[in-house]
Each structure stands twice: as C-alpha cells, then as structure tokens.
Length: 307
Image (cartoon, one colour):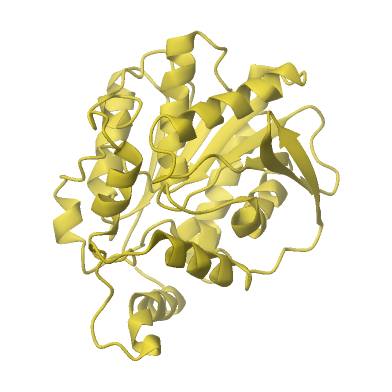
C-alpha cells in the first residue's frame, strides 16, 4: 500500500505545471530547448542539500571533469562508479553531487561521478565511450574489478547496462556487481508502459522518445550497446534493477531483468507499487524512496562484503 507522504509528494511533482500557471502537463515536442532544460535542471539541483558526513574532491579523469564523493571512514580499496541520469542530454557532477552522496553514505564507499559527453552535441557512442574510459581509469588507478560496483539512475541506469555489455565485448574485467534504477532499455520507446503509465509517471509526456532520439542520432536503435535489452547477458555480474510500477520504463525494466535472469545472471528485480521514475533518488522525502535506497545500498554492501 502506498504511503500517504509519497502520494502527496509524487502528486505535487506530477502537477508541477500548476505552479507555473499552466493548466496542462508539459509535452516534449519540436519546440523543446535543450539549453533551457539544462538550466532548469541546474537550478532545481542547486536546491538539494549535501548530506552531512561527506566531502568532495575534484578529479580529472582522462580530460573529463569528475568528482570524488567521500563519506567518513569509507571502506578501504573499494569504490562505486556512479553514472548520472538526465535523459542523455543533461546532468553533471554538480547536479548529482547530493544524490551520489546518499549512495556513498549508504554503501560506505568512495564514489566517483563524472561528466560524460551529452547529446545532442555528442550522440552515441560518445557517452558510453566516456563510461568505459572512466571504468578503465579506475583499473589503471589500481582498483581491482572485484572491488568496483557500477550504478546509475534513468539514463545513467541505461548506460550502466550498456557499460557492462561494452566491457564484456572488449574483454575488460567486469565489475563485482551493478545496479540500474529506472533504465530505458529499448531506445525505440515502444513498450506498452510508455502508453499505460504516461499519466501515472512524473516524466514529461513524450520526453523519453525525444531525448533518446538525440542520443541515438543516426545509429541503429536496436544495437545492444544503445538498447541493452538486445544484449547478451551471459557471464555478467549480479545485477539489481529497481523500478516503480507507475513508470513509463516499467516494461523495459521488467523485460531486461527477465532476459538477464534467463541468461544466468543473478538478478534482483525490485518493483515498487505506484512508484515513479527514479524515485529512490528522492530519498529521504518519503518512506518508499528511503526503503529503496536502503535496499540498493544493502545489495552493494553484500556484493562487496562490507559489514
């Protein structure tokens, strides 16, 4: 049963257009401005407060701006590589600093977040190439693959799955485990949940179709590295996939979880009643977000044998 607090907060987010004196929810169409959207994301993220007990340290990763998020007394020698979301078109270390800090604290890990290249200026494979480069950098810095967990939300969740497939293809040692929150896994955006959850989710109407098209560019959207639902999951590490039943990405998440499990992967498919897109990152605003965050961090700690 959905908690009253989550019902109120999700309701406010879904009806945010009313605060802008607009009667109808936003629809993403040809008039959409990437530049304005990035400004809105930056403005909204500036209101997120950093949790206590973490420090940050800027880092250069192969010419990419990156940032370490470090909790007090992190587990020695182990690391979380976090891939931020933002629809493939927005997001940065700065916009996701507070979100990553919550994972770093909950997992008791140093976390590295980085500014991968964004669409539409840099369509596929630029963002994925940067994810591979960041992972390789950790290996070059002396981290063992068995001491690395990769995770991300939304587009970052998609890139997490794509990264696993790319590492396997390139025969690079795989991380110990991975988590993916609310990924879109078929970038054609044709799953039934895009329709039946359109009015239930908090994502702007038609957002996924437009934003993923910027990332796909002129490439074939059914390429496994673009649409990880098409990938071969045999031999991949334990995977935690989290999704709300009111998400437009619900079917994408359920389908990729089922496929990975059929390929022999140890999959935790965590579905939350009436929850919306990327809801765990809203922790601690309502109970379900806090519980999902705690569950994901518990998965990470179990995989890395952190007490």
